[in-house]
Amino acid sequence: MALHRHFTDDALAPLVERGLLRKTQVLGRERVVEHIYFLLERGRQVAQSMVAEAPALAWYVDRTRLVVDLVDGLGGTQLKDRQYLLRDYADTPWGQHIGPITEQARERLRELQAAPGPGATGDTDQEAS
Image (cartoon, rainbow, N blue to C red; front, side):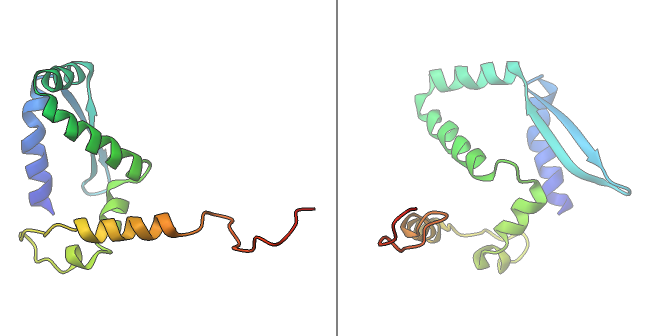
């Protein structure tokens, strides 16, 4: 776990150093329990400039928005716990490559799209009073 934190810190450090991101930490009793990164206005400008110069990068912007919509409000521990419900993640040895889960995700999406919405009873013959 510490290796991942150090990697993230190292990977994002140049962005923090150049004033594109700001980093804060949530301290627990004995250690840092969460790292929080904020995109600063200068970082937003650089990102927009990059997409303008290389429109193919818009794909990453779109995917990021999808992920944010999917996980909005969840913390890192909640996301990790959800991720490890997938056997492909849970059974992968530490430090090894986790294979793609594209087909499992598509199948799950199809199941969710086919399921009745909240409050649906399936009984269409009842009259409302």
